Length: 525
Image: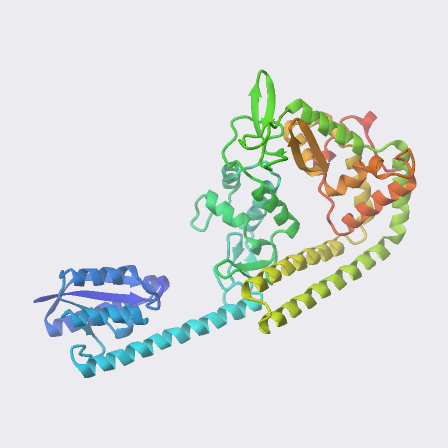
């Protein structure tokens, strides 16, 4: 008996594992082989669309045939072997070299002119069919995206609900994914320690195993979690209608940690300001070293001038900054009186801010429409269109988040502002009694852009505290800091941030308020 290869194929893994197509093809090929007294010595199965070129199992069949290890190949139908013209050309080449190619359901003699012509026509028809199918699939795919639906498998933390339905938050994994963003955004974890902590808490990947470092990187860079759908292959961005798992503010904070991260290895030594200071020249993180009973933070870039500072010097700068944030008695009394007045006008303030944000949101949507028109008129290429569209969608998510915070904090603003000022004013005292990790968190909250130039430490207050810390420097109209105009500017700035829900969480300070009542700083009557 003559020896042949039996080749069977389905387009998807699901068809191969749950369907009956493979078995039906195998049975038909066996019956065909028995009728023609062919012996099938090799069975090759593939779960891959024929629209793709370079299918590995199909290529293996071609290699076996060219090496003379089989006399021919038997396929169920012509389109099982080729729905693209390149693979059909490879099959025709086999036939031209004397290798037999048989199709169970089609009487095609590739050795005759008429048979080859008929087969060529069927191959072209099959190619056109798959091309049209691909186009229709693409239309459906982008149709879902434009509706705000994600037509692919839900990422970890979400659950699929079926076709034409938005993903929903997984009640088990969703909170753990949110925790992953919060922990990494604290800048206290690298991928190794974060993976260990999340595994301990119960976060698992789709296979039930531990989330790898690559998996954590993918998760923390995925804008789907705050409401935007990005197709990385094409660089396109769409607004999702699914419920966001985190806010854009949290995502931006995580992105800041990710882009500023230069060392992902586990820390041998726990230094107070590890990965918190950067070189003013190269902007890389300074590395902590212990030398002669002192801790130094040095820049290891060879091209940079010598940059090295002792930990005590950094600590002294932190102390000076926190002292500048303290409020004296006259300031506390003034803030208390102003907050009392704010309670009377808070609703009006919120209404004005809502109108302003709504107007801004309308402007962004109008710009998106004009941008789309420019793209359709071919005055913008696709790359520029997608870049500008992504930027506008990010702005849109920020404004929408601010509107959400505005609604959520309706009526409670003055109380929150009062508590915030009370905690912020006590930061120096709280820092004295805090544990090392609590001190690190305070430094992260109250400072930004912590740079070292030579031996000079430059700590910039973060935005909510900039007006407070710099009130001496920004007041040019008098020799003293305790003037109402400066205080009004500080309070108005903080009130606006509070209205938008952009004040940082100072809960780390709340535990120190009752430790020393003689030093407690309060704005309450």
